Image (cartoon, rainbow, N blue to C red; front, side, top):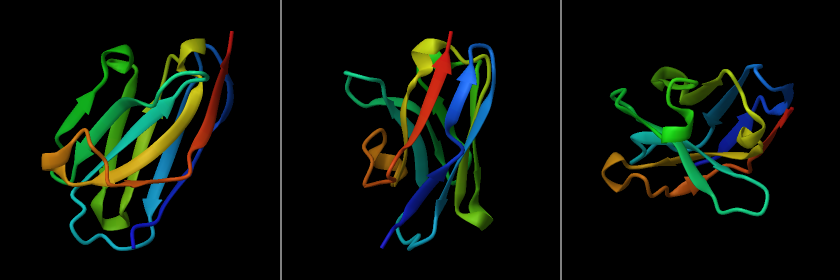
Length: 119
């Protein structure tokens, strides 16, 4: 069973930085892609960035140039480095895992971590 646990969320001022981490402490069978998604208040969940185990990345337009996704396959961990944060980045951030040919569909989700950016 895949078990995803996120960490690193919190409150930060606009222009600041945060790094999110997500570790898969369960099965890695058939998992070759991970990603970050977010759900702003009152809105639907949306893609932030995805990465395959081979390192291929994809970013949503609003975060391009500000966020960087990285994966450590040996640690079964995916990271999201967020810089130049804006109030509109405020959301619950979810880690996801799945298979690269199904992206952006995700098979497994973490519990989410809150990121709040103050103006």
